[in-house]
Amino acid sequence: MEIKAKQLAQILKGTVDGDPEALVTTFAKIEHGKPGALCFYANPKYEHYVYTCKASVLLVNKDFKPKNKVEPTMVRVEDAYRAVADLLHYVASKKYTEGCHRGLRSRWFLTTKFGKKVYLGDFSYVGHHARIGDYTKIYENVYVGDNVTIGTHCILYPGVRIYAGMVIGNNVIIHSNAVIGSDGFGNAPRPDGSWEKIEHMGNVIIGNDVEIGACTTIDKSEMESTIIGNGVKIDNLCQIAHNVQIGDNTAIAAQSGIAGSAKIGKNCILAGQVGVAGHLTIADHTILGAQAGVIGNIRKSDQVLLGSPAIPIKTYFRSYALFKKAGENDEK
Image (cartoon, rainbow, N blue to C red; front, side, top):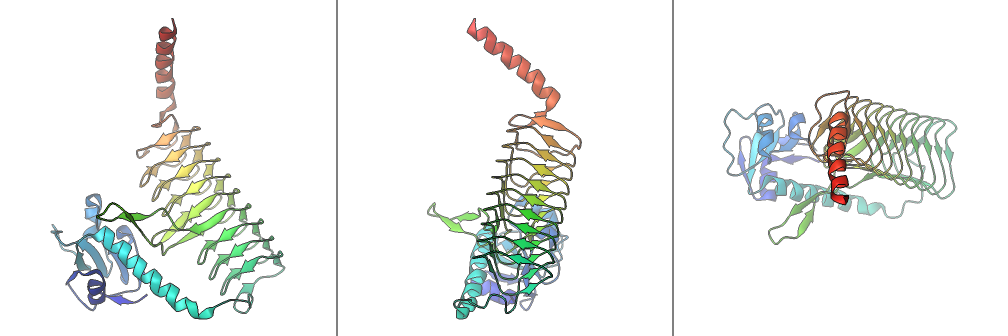
């Protein structure tokens, strides 16, 4: 992708405030903006990043009035969040169109690089320009998309699906029917109340020594990466949404769900059916009991929390004693 600021303004029906020749080649979140990147600002709580962002182009609402100097060229649009959705859709449509000439791909191994003693089961598919490390086992009926990188000594059990562009480290085990890299649940509201799909152009990066349970889904990011740290253990039937970051050696039990852009610290434990709301931060060494619901940041490490909304365990048990007693009184 190579788009100049003036072209962005034309595509998104906006205006350029700065250098119309500013060139972008990738997307990034505003807090990670760097030269060559396109970022957007739509949520007021992120305004402080506007003045530190080093991106080449920044999409903003047309009525935005900066309080300090803004380094990136600004492209002013009616609705920056909606404009990002439109732009991602535009880039994705160009990408899909450019790929159509390839047709059916029957020569699987022409551009794929396999390491030593790789096992590939019957009816499995490995896409173009994929790289598979030494001693990795890909069992039957597995799909590995284009440009995927898989490290050494990995095991992909039958039915695993890995979308194009994903990155998987060494000694990773992925159990049957897990999906790595599906689109996140991103939709922008239209004026008529319907929803417009936001294209996801990022990927998933999985570290070393990770295990992912059966039927678990890890969504790719809208831009940049969903990141699973080293040593992470994820049970069956879990949902990890787009842009989530999970710290090293965290364990997540079955049927837990983590909403978009949440950051889970290192060495945390999430018991069964834990739910974490989006854009939250959970400190290192946090333990969340079964069915805990996290709706706010957990900034203090080494805590055990229970309940929904989740509260420290001692507070929870004191509260539980009170409402249990109240229930016993009602029965009399």
